[in-house]
Image (cartoon, rainbow, N blue to C red):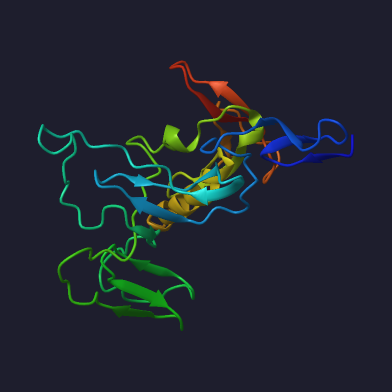
Length: 255
């Protein structure tokens, strides 16, 4: 035996002598999901699929390495004569776009603002606060093809909860927690999400919080996914990968 070589994709045993050459003991197939930190910080961008859905990147194995890539778009079934596919007519289908800033309360925004704040929409109407007052620009002329400059990603269901797609897990190591403001009083939920979804959920949560009015009401202790409250502000909850009763396990927090 001459050497043992270990990689993230295969365990290779190198033999010398009569056998000679390399013997592959096993490998991990392309397309499988890598560990939650193997791709580093995930870009906060989205892919618009032909059926109109938005998809975030996943850390998957490709050509022997872990890369941050978009999964395949869902197929759109069509009628005979078109190979079972139909053209959705979405000119932005398949185009990779950055996440949009929060929506402006009105356009153009007026009055005082916090330096660094930005708001806008998918076609490029944008207001920026650089000097303590809003400076707004209108989108460029619209033409044929895709006129979107960013993609508005939806992270919450109708009740305000983070969508299951951002929380599914196989093991607690897939999970982390994100602190989200839930109302205009400043109450917060510290919820469990997949590591590779954290950046997108944080961005969605900030955009939602920026849209809350200033109510001036007091806030209480932050809550976890199971309803327990934190005793010390800023504490980190316990995170488990827990079946949700529908055959799917989700990242779940508990103080």
